[in-house]
Image (cartoon, rainbow, N blue to C red; front, side, top):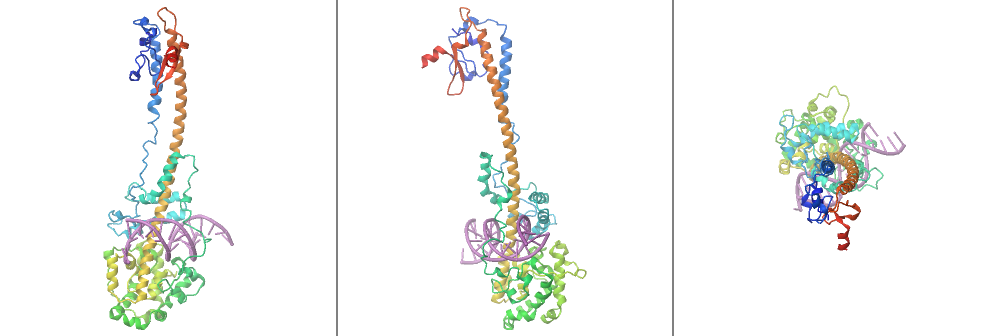
Length: 498
DNA sequence: AAGAACTGTCATATG
DNA sequence: CTCATATGACAGTTC
């Protein structure tokens, strides 16, 4: 009865969908007994026109089928598995590859120097511009020969789930970077400090330099933090640590116990400070040496030993050093040896520097902090140190390393925030794009449905059964199979199936 | 003066 | 256990 369908529907392009030979999939289906036989070989005047219509229809469906999933510009977004190696210029302190990446400064491979060389240049931009975006630009912009600033993998790992969750919960409120570090800058409203030793924090500003200032967790002193140092501090405290006060902490008996080596070391100490102010001239110069570890061997001391008496009686000695450190504290390592004469600003020492000075630690903080443990221990064996000296040295080493670690940690945190903000922006853009595509797809789908309906009606209007009677689309119904294909099935068959 | 940002330090966890 | 490193938290300083 419907044999004509076999020819009426030359447009079925997806014959593979013909699960049932008697039916046409992909839209028009006709029963095998449809009256197509009668039309066999007939050249209907509307065939070409219908063919064109079908092709147009299929073009629409193809458009949707192939366009939607693929033309998103975000398909190529690299969702880094968060384990990408970080390679930020100058940020090599905690990254092992910092040792292998040459720095622009000409073969300087000391990680500390690397840190000093770039981080110190970068961070001011972060701080003074006071925006994390600016920080990111600065960080990445100064990445030097490190291409493609990427994130520290480890830190990102914990954040990954939430980030990926954004894909599923795009309606989540924008995650501000602040929240990620919200606790980092806890204000002073927190409970009482848990420090036993930190009580002297900030005292130097209002407290005259006393021996309290020399107390520390090592039974030594806790002075002000480095920036605290006021001119008053510098001018009054440090000289007070000369022989007179040192004697309080460091008895002459101890000095005697140090032996000849220790005494020499003590002398070396005073001389060394004169010659190398950077050793104790503030955290930057102390913790970020301009020399490689191999170059940090004891300096030759050509100057005649300066007696403690001389030091005490000559504030200019310390003052010189302070002036030197004033030139280095905020400047590049190249400024270490700037002549202090023209700079009248007295600059104080950090707490550890003052402690070291007070206890006559015979080697620079730079070594204490940066030497590998073996070299450090070897260094300790070269001198006979008292228990308090040893404790101080170890504290200085611990604090110095931790300070660098904290700086690295904060730097990474900042970079992660910048990265995640960028990632969030990309995801939001992707979300908007997908929403637009979905809308367009739904619009096209509606068009297709309408055109399909029209085409069905047109096809049926052209068909005739053996008796020349037109088929009525009312005699057929659309049936969808589990595989998703839609067939036009005679209602009689539908009724039989039921 | 208040608050944000920065910094040093400690405690703790991890490898 | 020691050591190095990372990080949260706290407190002080600076702007």
